[in-house]
Image 1 (cartoon, rainbow, N blue to C red):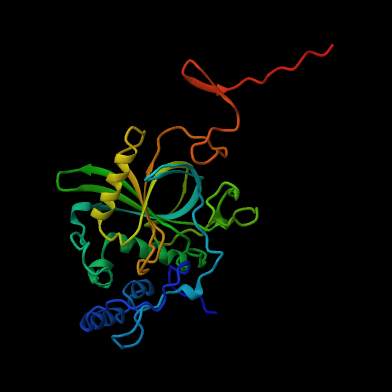
Image 2 (tube, rainbow, N blue to C red; image 1 turned 120 degrees about the vertical axis):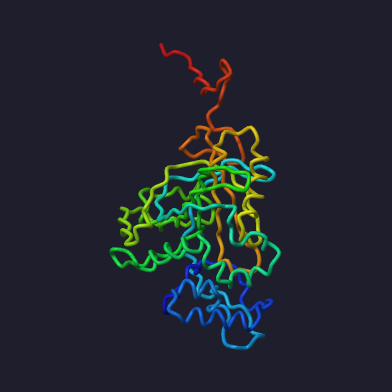
Length: 327
């Protein structure tokens, strides 16, 4: 079967052939003309050419679910604690391909469009010109073979965006935003622990890692992120605007009040094809600055297996009971 040239071959749900409200014919025709002017496969995909087949205005959305590969990889993690509205996770060190851009969040071109038909928003030229779309396109080209080895790399999930607030103003913040794709397991330095990783992660057999191909685009770079623990808030629906992400980030900050973290740094994370209709998965992460254990620990906040006793307000392993002395 010919490889599908789009970044969302991993989608799991079976919502193909679900009718949706279509944009006006003039809008669709305008974008067909735009796509015929030599734009990339990724832009054609994002603008709906893959989904809106033919000229019939009563057509249905067509997803790529039939081509889903069960071996598609997901960034591994281990749940450390679960709370009512959020959870704490441990992410091992991992290699990514990334790019960075500086953004004025007050100038979000999609601001105020939260209640618009999301499909019309995503088919607009305004959406395709957002910094996030441009970053995605650069990374997608890298995994499609625009690299020194001309090597195609499987798409993984989720797409992770790291936000570093460089300047705060009354109107909005300036951020350095780094978008990253997790590289497949064959490029990773260490084999992940299947017992303690997230249940959907499917690690490959132990192996010597392959070097990831070097990017040709000087905006794209390879990066190894150190291990980290993050507080995670998960939510559904369409997250197209900065205000949508900011709302969930503020809620998470309220939930973790009293925890140690850097308020000028956070992550926004998307798992699904933007055109997926239902059961969408989005997350906001805030990195915990507490020291954490790198060895496997129980989930749900249970105590480690070693018994602990308090001494001077600190915990230390309970000393072993000595048996009777031998004569």
